Length: 142
Image (cartoon, rainbow, N blue to C red; front, side, top):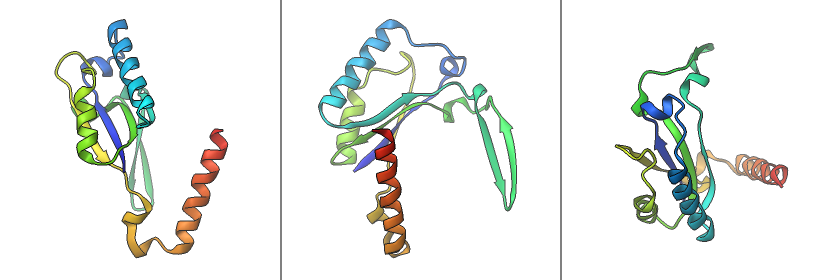
């Protein structure tokens, strides 16, 4: 099972405040544990929403909205992609994580869909296309 582990933003991450050396060290050590355990597939921090944009869809119309975005506690400051056996295992790993802000913070855990989750709507042709695209992505990253 794959999960996206979402680190929520706060006023400091939205202000572009970088973590101190202590937190960088703690997170580096935690990431090393995840990699050594074969769990971490990806992970990165994100720039503040002031450097981002949103595209709103309404039928065929597209509207671009430049950041910053007001709902700080609903924004994402960083993420990991983990491969674990269960949601419970992901929870146990998150509980071991250093506090990402040093203050009040929240980390969200969301399961990523696998092809088997889509059922008959994902036809054999669509499955082959998905497998081909994933293989190309992997090859391009090598």
